[in-house]
Image 1: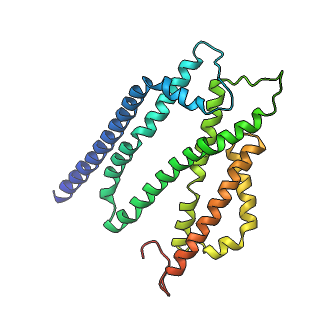
Image 2: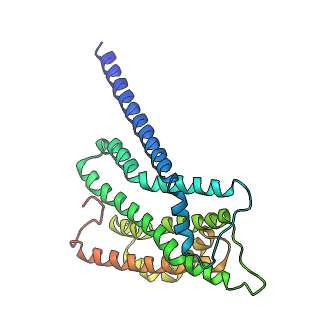
Image 3: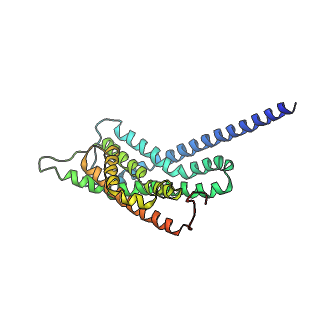
Length: 250
């Protein structure tokens, strides 16, 4: 009888967790869709704002549905970016009860830092790198060779580049974590700088569109991020008490 009660109790706890997970997913999806619907009514202004900084006067659409689809995709993309803090709150509320207090104190700042770095990568890619890349390629035109850019292909190019920068901007966090848990020391990372540069250029070639300018534009900031993060990790190692294990739970 006692074993049956324990099994029933476990099953009730499992069902409660599944119900909470379902609720978190449903409300997160509703928040995303609601934000996207609201942003749809401002998608024209958002699109005009994004195009205004281009080195060409206009973008063009070549099928009846192309402009509509671009505005819809932008609405859902920016809707997710707007709703993401709420989505993160729901996910954190679901997972945090399963963590110890010490683990919550460690994980929360790491996740928040990751989100900030991702948004920073998006902003850096669009505001700093995209004008440079586009200006470089547009200069290959002439008096009789005028750029006529498709709005869909342009934002596909921009989306890939921005997403790639959002991912690679996680590098400082990865380096600091690896150094903090003792997997690799900052001194070793700085000594192996030649191999690191080769790996960075290979990663940039994979993540960016197939042109050398985009690859260089990603690789150079990534090198700066790497060396800056390694220096920060080195300073943190020097502040670590002598004889410390270097683990993340110190």
